[in-house]
Length: 336
Image (cartoon, rainbow, N blue to C red):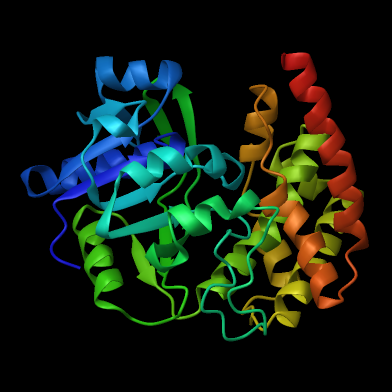
């Protein structure tokens, strides 16, 4: 790709908003940064700028960016970074498509299994298989195109605490990877730009391994926290719940390995790390309390569905999937 002059963060919530602020401040006149957001958060960004409290900071970063809820108001972009969750992408397809020109790359910051997972996948035996549950009618595959995508796994705790105001709970780290595993010029250019803006970036030749490694935690803690309304520290201090976390992690690892991924960390090591995390409120619990739809399919549904595809039993994940699906229905019904 040529040099990057325009970047749009589509879905500038907690994570996307923090990335947008750092890019706008770190790159200044070098790049034009815009965001697509909505509701009160959008108004907060327009009125006060994007305010981001980094972990331990005495004052926030404040960035002024072009902000809109209509992507058609923006010109085609050299780079698009999505901060949307997997279940929100389908509705965003028309807007995302308006931001693309022939050379646009799209960095998709996603938890769980992404819609493009099997694109150029040489490990699983299912290369180019489309996943209907994540991409109904193939809209993303057709309108965005998996060949544009660069995968991204984020290790960054973030929460919108007021409209236009974001608080980060740690010094984050982001892993980028081409679906093919290649070290392309595009990914090198994008990584260098993000690093210049002060974002901690690494590149993986096996991005699917990174996806599954993070999913070990997300598939367990997100739905269990939503079902119990418990913080991560409370889940890990409860012997029955921490045992359930371990069961889900074992199922995730088994499905991942059956599809050709290699996870560097054992379940025991992951559980030990989880005990150190502290009183964190997961993103699914945040959404539950806000009356929003829960990110179920990429985090839990895909463990069960891909387990079925690979012939791997996932009894604990299947039970949790049934419970959290009904919880989501009831929560949305009450929220109106």
